[in-house]
Length: 283
Image (tube, rainbow, N blue to C red; front, side, top):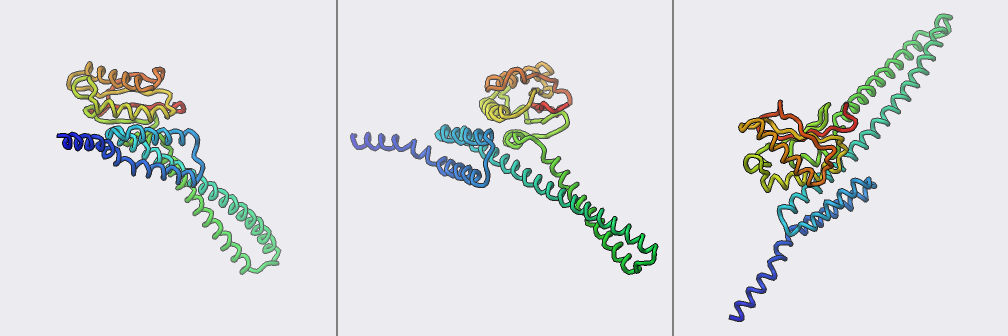
């Protein structure tokens, strides 16, 4: 009997080690990714704080697989957001370099135009050969063609910069919902069924999802968060109750009450819940 009891104690004492062993490589990999990113270039303080907080949560929740996976996804999304910001900065530097090159080409073109004008005057005085004139005309045409090509490249890069202008936090939210940037703000949409167990009561998984989204929204610069739920089969009253449940959960998770508001779900796809993030700069 003593041997059986001793074996039982040894098995029970070893169980937490097995449960905690799996997240360790992920935490080590995350720490290495963060150190590598810091070696490449300085990370803005706010972004660095968010990454460190996500890493700390991974360490804190490693004994709880569900929460640990949420923390790991938040960390990965923030690392992707950092990479996207750096990519935009690189693209901006390339754009500025092309603009400088266009300026130099414009200056050269003006110089050639002035020289061409002088040669035309000399030609009028019969002091210049036709071959020289043609050579200058060809050179000017080449300069114009090159200038037009560079202008097209700048326009293309400028268009890409506009397309990539969505807020950095929107990338992190794509882990939990569909995100679309529009003129009236950033639309964060997800199925209402993924949040509610039945009627207007949030499910355990839905509550965890809203909690994770709230931790990202607190880093956003939105001046207002409008909560919308599409009309349900149970009527407008059920949609309103569900919107109020979402708003109440976000308030509990630290979203300031001054930015939260209910809005009509008219026009949304049936069965959809949405957060409309209105930025301060949005008209």
